[in-house]
Each structure stands twice: as structure tokens, then as C-alpha cells.
Amino acid sequence: MSRTNKKFPTHIVVFLAPAVVIYTVFMIYPLVDSLRLSLFTTNAEGQEVFAGIQNYRTLFTNDLWAPRLWGAIRNNFVFFAIHMLVQNPLGLFLATLLSSQFIRGRAIYRTLIFTPTVLSVTLIGFIWRLILSPLWGISGDFLEIFGIKNQPWLGQASTALPILSLVSVWQWVGVPMMLFTAALISIPDEIIEAARVDGATAWSVFWRIKFPLILPTVGIVSVLTFVGNFNAFDLIYTTQTALAGPDFSTDILGTLFYRAFFGFQLQLGSPTMGAAVAGVMFMIILLGVLLYFFGWQRRMLRVEY
Image 1 (cartoon, one colour):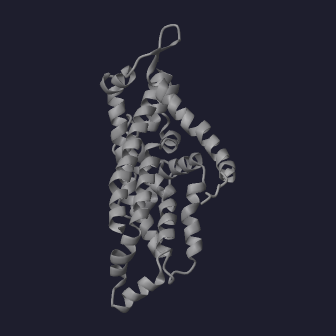
Image 2 (cartoon, helix red, strand yellow; image 1 turned 45 degrees about the vertical axis):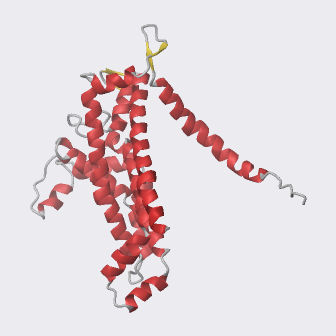
Image 3 (cartoon, helix red, strand yellow; image 1 turned 60 degrees about the horizontal axis):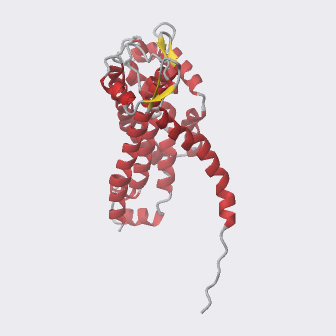
């Protein structure tokens, strides 16, 4: 029997090559070079000298760096927890509500909710600073209706991070809403109708049929939220500057990286220490993604098979 010689699919290479080149140049190379730079330090002559893990040891043990690093990690997890507990359930609720055939103007509502995600973060930060200002903001009059006293929400260490987290939720809730909507509308109507014929209530249909079927999407939204939150920087920077005040209460890994790499005010920048902070960010994100793939994803595969 003669074997059929299949031609190499050169068209696939042609189509993939531009994306691979762009991803390598703008993503893989900067990441690898940043990890390489984190293993070096700069001597008095300005030359790079191999230092091994000394930069990481300084980050975790030095009296000046360690409090800032651990504080940024803690704040980042708080930032992520608020998004997981508020943004994603709210996105699921809106997706469930707006996927109902009994709601008129569903497309309009989806568009309005999704619109903040395409706005400039600088604009978002400026608008919310005006809204939350205790002097000329409109939040005070609105909150007094509910008996809440007006106060400098972004000027207090106890409220600045939760408020900015909720502002971020307001901006990005449209993303999980659209992902959940796509998952919900892909469920066959026959399954829903069969459950209703058997006497299932709307609540039972959601928790016993719809929610189990969209669990893979829940996992994807969760890991995207984790990665996005630990890469966050722009909202904190535009509202609180790189110092992430007051008293570093809104400091996250993104703002710590900026101060370490570029410097800010009296703090001198150090590319090698900044690269070490970036290395810590990469390891945290990598551990979170691996936990998703080897924990949640494998569990979903076992359920399917």
C-alpha cells in the first residue's frame, strides 16, 4: 500500500505567523527579559552585575521594601475579593435578568452596562473623584437620603480601597455580564421547557439546570478576574497617584512596581528592583492560573466525563 503524502499546511503557518511574532515581541520577550533583569543589580559604575535572588531577598526581608510588598499583596487580594464577591455575582444576575425574553430593550440595557468598559480610565478616575469629593461632589446629597454622612471617601485609609474597588466593579461589570449572557443563551430551550413542564420553578431552573451548565464560564470569568486584578494599576494611579494614598492604603502590586521601576518623588527608580516586583506579580498570577487549570478545570472535566 502506498502512503498518501500529505502536504504541510503552510496556510496555517501563514495565518498564525503574524500573531506569533507580535505576541513574542510584545509579550514573551519583555516577560523573559524582565525575569532576567530581576536577577541582576546595578553597581556604582552603572553596570549590571549578576546578583541571583538577592533582589527578591531584599523585597521580602528589607525593612524598607518588605512592608510595602506585603501591604501591596494584601491590598491586591482585597481588591480581587471585592471583585469576586460583587462584580461577578452582579454580572451573573444582570446576565440572567437580561437574557429573559420577558425584558424589553435587553440590547439597550446591555449596551449601557457595557459602555464604561470602553471609556478611558483617566476619564473614569476624574469623574469619580468629582462625584466622591466631599466639597463639590454629588455623592453626599445622594447618600444623605439613606442616612449616610458625607465624608472624604478617597481620603480615608479605611474606605479608599473598598470605594475604588467598587468603582472598578462599576466599570468592568459589563465584561462578566456579556460572558455569562453568551453562556446562558447557548443553553437549549428544550431543556428549560422540559424542566418547566415537570413543575420546576424559575429558581430551580436556574440553580439546577442553568448554573451547572455555565460552570466552565464561571471558572473562566474567575481566572480572568484574578489576572486582571493583579495587573491593575491605572485606576489607582489616576485617582491616588503612584503613592497610592492615603498612607499606602490603596497600594497594590501595580503601583509598587511603578515606584520601584521608575521612582516617584523622593524615591529613586531601580529597574532591577522593579523587575523583581514584576517577577513576584508573575509568580502570583502563574500560581493562580495553575490552580485554575489543575483544580477547577480538571474537576469540570471529571464532571463532564
